[in-house]
Amino acid sequence: MMEKNKFLMLIVMLLASILVIGNVNAEEGENICSATDLNKLRQEAANIKVTYVPNVIDTEDVSPETEDNSHVKESVLDIKVYNVSEHMGLKYEYSGEGVVPGSFVRSASDAGNDGAITVRQRSYNRIITYVITVISNYGSCAGQTLKTMRITLPMFNYYSLLEACEGIQDYYLCQPYVTSEVGGADFFDKVENYKAKLLSNEAIDIEDDNNNIVTATFSGVKKHKYLVVGLVVAAGVVATVLILKRKKSEV
Figure 1 (cartoon, rainbow, N blue to C red):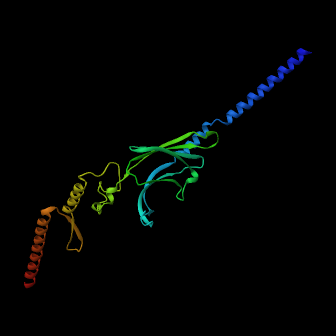
Figure 2 (figure 1 turned 45 degrees about the vertical axis):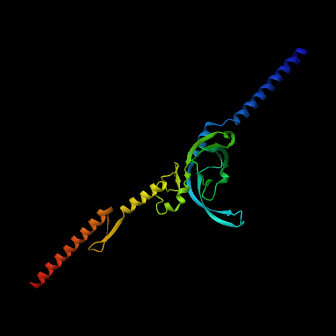
Figure 3 (figure 1 turned 120 degrees about the vertical axis):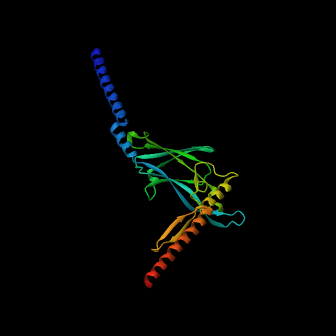
């Protein structure tokens, strides 16, 4: 009888072990990110794009002396990430020469009216690189890295605000955002030389016989020399035509 009871207890223990192992395996299966789900998430992440957009905002500047608030225009760069679904989050990591590294996270709920998640970089005199990691927060695939993007922001060129740069914002030393240091003892010399070249190659509009504006470009002394010669030749042609017409009418 005792042996029979032991045999029954052994069977019960085996069955219990099988049930426990089965439940553990089922739970582990539920926590495994399937290849199908992961591929679907990565396909969604492939549509995510990042760019930066220059912007100008109004900020309040409080004077410590008068405590008056005045609005000041400030140049900023808006980092925009598009097409982030609700199944994903973003981790931002930034670094650069002379920049204290840091990180922060954003989610799809942070998207604005334009559908983009926007992070604003205030005017900065350093080049900053952002590494943006797209991470899944979907079910058993939570925590999986889906995509990594890198974007480098240029630094704000404070020299572009100088009066010397007025009218020549397309010149590389006067552009608002640059990827290398601007300044130095020869900055103003370079700017003045650039302006001088523009003046020496200015365009002159001349009206032709059909009242069309013809633009001719001359440089330096040659510009005036060729202009005078051209006008003299044109006057001679007109005078010759008039004389011939007069002679024909007299005949």
